[in-house]
Each structure stands twice: as C-alpha cells, then as structure tokens.
View 1 (cartoon, rainbow, N blue to C red):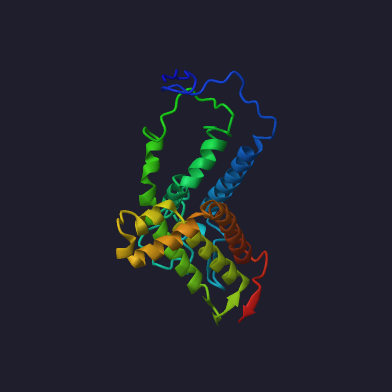
View 2 (spheres, rainbow, N blue to C red):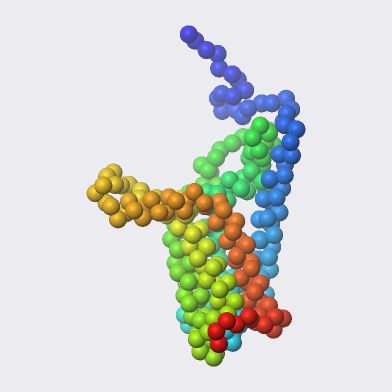
Amino acid sequence: MATTADPGTSGRTRARLAARTLRTDRWWLPPLVTTLGLATFVIYAGVRSFMRTGYWDSEHHYLTPFYSPCLSDSCVPGSAHFGTPIGELPGFIPLAFLSLPFLLGFRLTCYYYRKAYYRSIWLSPPACAVTEPHSRYTGETRLPLIVQNAHRYFFYAAFVITVINTYDAIVAFDGEQGFGIGLGNVILLVNVALLWCYTLSCHSCRHVVGGRLKHFSRNPVRYWIWTQVSKLNTRHMQFAWITLGTLVLTDLYVWLVSTDVIADLRFVN
C-alpha cells in the first residue's frame, strides 16, 4: 500500500514544528551546565597557559601539564625535561605551544565533546523534542566542521603527549632531596592515569587496535586489547569530564606549591 511522505520530516528540509517545544521540564539545564563547565575550563586553561609563572616547583620537580613539554630557552631552569632546542619565545606564545594545539584539537574533535558543544553551544539540537535555530544542516561535510574527521590523527599526537606527561610524573619522584613522595606526586600520578583512561577510551583508539580485523580468532592479542579498550570506551564521557577537573586540580596544586602559597604534604622525604 502506498504511503504519503510527511513533508515535515522527509526530504532535505528540517522538521517543522509550530512551537519551539512542548516540553515542560527544564530541558535547558543540561546544555547550560555543559556550556558553563566547558567555558570555565577554557578560560582557566587559557589564562594559565600564558601566565608563565607557577608552573614548575624546583624543590619537588613538579611540572604542570599545561607547560609540558617545555622546550624553550624561556622555560625556567629544570622544567625543560627534553632540553631547549627552541630559543626565547615572545610572551604571546605559550611555552607548551607544541603540545597545546594538538591537545586542543584532540578534545575539540572528540566524539563526546562534539555532542556536548553541538547541543549546548551550537544548539544543534539543544535537546530532544526541541527545535533548533538553524534552517540548514550539512553535518561535517564542509568547512569548518569537516576538520572533525582529523580526530584520528589528533589521537596519535595526544598519545605521545600523554607519554610525556607520564614521564613528567615519574621524574617528579626525584626532587632536590632525592627520592621522595608527596601529595603532589599522588596528584600527578592520578591525573596521568585518568588521562590514559581518556586517551585510550577514545573511539579512534578502539579502531586502531581492533579495526579492519575480519577474524578476531586469528588475532587473539589484538582482540583482547580491543575488548579492554571497548570497556573503557563505555566510560569515555565520564573520563572526558573527570580529566578536565584533574587537569585543573593538578595545575592549581603545582601553582600554589611553586609560589609558596601552600607547602607540599610529604609522605616520604
């Protein structure tokens, strides 16, 4: 039996609703909270990345992730774990200018963050059963959103940077007084562990370890890795938000300790 297509839901046009929504609940609250959360992190991280103070504690060798790796002659002594192949940098360039753009690209193109800011900032759509203010929808087929397809390449860069952050956390156990453990070490380790959870739970990582396999039985090692990454993948949204918090907490702690606002709580040495 032939059916008649609904002009409001078929074809190239968007669904046309007379009212913006018939919902009576506070549907606007999740987008608002998401916007405030993302804005808070962006403002804090942006300001801290340009401050050039309070990012290295010389006594305990704590380095904040916002300044890692520090490769310029502008870096304070001791903070450049990989040398200073780059000369002095003007103040308008962050000291971690080699890593921050890739980390920003990794987060911006992340599948979860796309959903978050598409709904909360771009309002496309803001919530279920709520009309959006855009008359056209082209998806990620044109500039600038076509850049989202580069997410897999940002993943590789983020993986390398997470390795560097891990190195920073390990060398922090060797301070001026030799081996020691303080609250800062615990915070750095927890932060890098959660960064690994976020990075490895990425959809691109799941594809790297298990994609294109036609027979899992013939690749038992890759299949096992794929199953473990898949378990992490179910918590990707949670890791995305948790790591924003741990990054701020880690940076704030290093900032306060390195500027002698607070003293590091020491457990060993």
